[in-house]
Image (cartoon, rainbow, N blue to C red):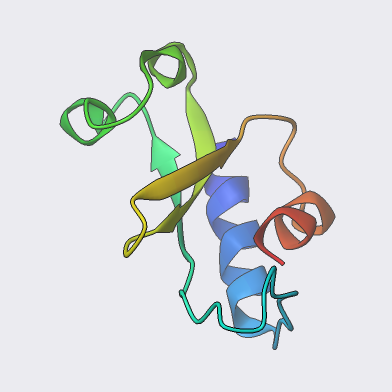
Length: 85
């Protein structure tokens, strides 16, 4: 699952995504990463404890605002693009 997820995230990152802005003055960038919970336990300590039971998930993060969202469903290229975009 993780190797497919990395491939999907890479493919989506190569596309030119137009993100919908929630407000006209919002200029916050969104960072995203595929998190492997078995290898990144220390990193996961900064987030909600419910993610620790997952093998991997896609994480979107707004560094300036300190907000994040996680996609924990079945990851496909289409689902990754919907989540990130």
